[in-house]
Image (tube, rainbow, N blue to C red):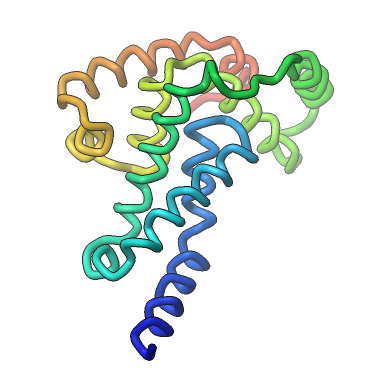
Length: 182
């Protein structure tokens, strides 16, 4: 009984420390806050069942992999799931256009940028989006990204190149960063 209490405490500490980052990763992967929380919840449920084995290694890497796998699994089943009937693009456009005249010091500029990035990421295929998120949000190497997705290194490189080309030409991002120099 003592070991079970310690296991629960260790798992709870892990969830409290890492769940926000996992939800952020999932949201970047799927673009939907509610679905992101569901993906993380499912991954954490699976991790809890194996916690005695995975806590000795790198539990964050294990759960991150589970989130990515859950996302890819959800994408494969998506035609059979509920789909939204409307689009939020009109609301997003109204919101973005209302923010265009604001100064760079305005804190809402960050909101506009996040909306533009989310909209641009939505134009990518599931593999392109997963590669970009793992490479640039999770800061994984190409080799680590390939291992996480279970694809060849060359696939990661070519997919990343295609995705970056799409993102560079995305009007959502060029409008969002108009007038800025990097």
